Length: 420
Image 1: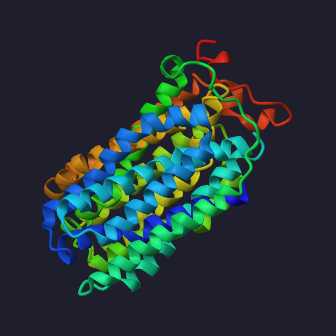
Image 2 (image 1 turned 90 degrees about the horizontal axis):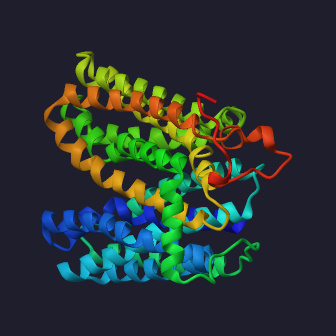
Image 3 (image 1 turned 180 degrees about the vertical axis):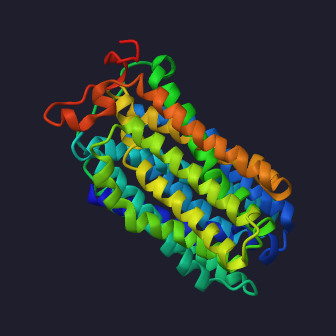
């Protein structure tokens, strides 16, 4: 488990090392223009959407470790070639390889955590994963920002080469992991296994509802961070770029500082109620954002309110990390955790693709409707979470009550409904 957490930290470090500077690198340093830079960011999302359905099947049949190692090698090749690419075609192909590799890492690492943890330790394991991911992103972005020089292509080549080296180091580290035995679907033909897995997943009402809830969660939070919310801050609240950086730092700092304190609180709370509480906290965050842009106070008050908005989002994220991922694992039937993790990662990527497309234009031109829309979406999260709780078994919603036994997983457990 310690090696898996090292893997999470290193992969996040590599992501934070380069992704914030992709637009500048492609548009300005390589001189390929804003259109190509925008296409590069779109290619990341498209590559993830293409590979994730196949990644789930591969994890189920082969195990998460071989899939992770293949993804790391692909990401390393993509990062290295991106640093050397000099034309639009090479940049887009390199971005596709890097995006596909990074997308597959997420469900593979999550499935490894599931296989190496028990019901007692799973929430803490996922909380640690989220903590290290944010720490890695923050440190990577900080170091990367000091290495790059927009007047020298070689500084970006060095940046991508270091990222590729980090992925290859991670290959060496993860190659030493010996995974515990867990069920695999290897004997059945590939087509029938995949078909059966998808049929079981779509028949699992609680998992389908969790996917809908997950889409709304990622759409309302992560899908707005770097597009809608930042555009709203600049256009409506007059936030400077330095203040925007402070807000992003406040989000990361809140997660790093609060994660394990929050963990103690949520470990003995119903998971559905914790997610509902996140919706309420984010509703307060959107009210605070509304004050920042529409409250007509001083610029200092607007900046403080905007920074507080990002911090409140971080508090909600810290509550979700030990809640949602373990719930996905507990809903998965034996042997299908990889497919369930991949499907949930696919839902996240869809939300991250749709969120900026909807939030960006709305925030830039219709400030009031933007805040009201996402305030209502946050309240909708609470409603969806309470509804989900009616379809979870007691062991899935309140796992601390069953610490002395093996938690029953998947649709084999008869859910307790409101009527029952």
